Amino acid sequence: MIKTLDKFAVGECGVVRCVSGNGAIRRRLFDMGVTNGAEVTLRKTAPLGDPIEVTLRGYELTLRRTEAACVSVEVKS
Image 1: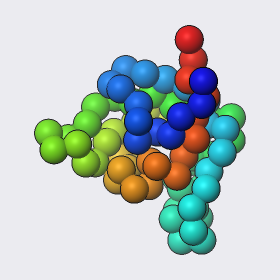
Image 2 (image 1 turned 45 degrees about the horizontal axis):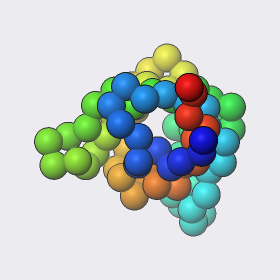
Image 3 (image 1 turned 60 degrees about the horizontal axis):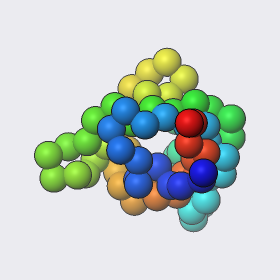
């Protein structure tokens, strides 16, 4: 099943399949290592839901919900 990273539940993991978005946001995600084939796990969310913290390529990365909505991930079952 494929869904965007902003729809993940805490502890859910998957593999990045597509990064969409406009130029600056897309470029920023690529620069941070969010590329096709990268494994990602949602570690925690802020009390009000934004931002979220994910583990990606061995480090913790904090993303805004709007950025996470640009990342399509295939959920591991």
